[in-house]
Image 1 (cartoon, rainbow, N blue to C red):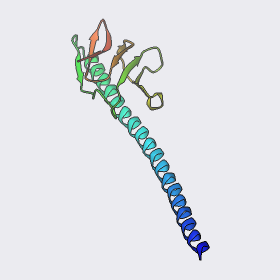
Image 2: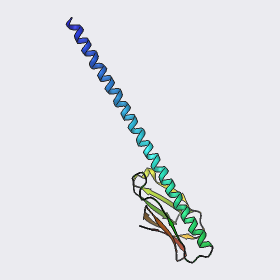
Image 3: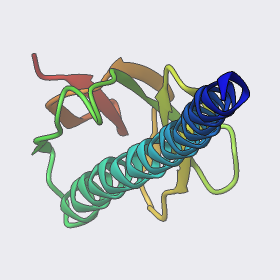
Image 4: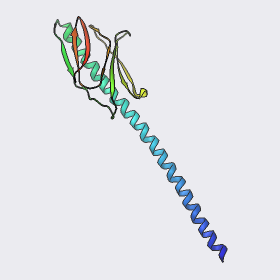
Length: 145
């Protein structure tokens, strides 16, 4: 009769151990899924910011092409994307010129081409509201904080 009581206890302990292993596996799988979704959300957010920045540069370019001697275009960008700071890097040395949205997580960086007629001045500004100005015949991005 004593053997029977031991087998119930052993069975119960084995069931608890198997349940704990299965629940741990589910938690780990869910955690990596959430990390993957956050990475994709960050990248999507940086693409939106980059497209808005390129749009602001192209608007300033059109204004400069119409003969405007003073061009100032404000581009209202968020200071953070998915809770992370970023920088806006304008690169005039590539062909075509590019805007890079550079995050602290290099996997989420976005590089977008800029189709424009007016020359761009290369530079880097922190993310957030910016202003595109025409100075000495070149468009320049400045922080508007």
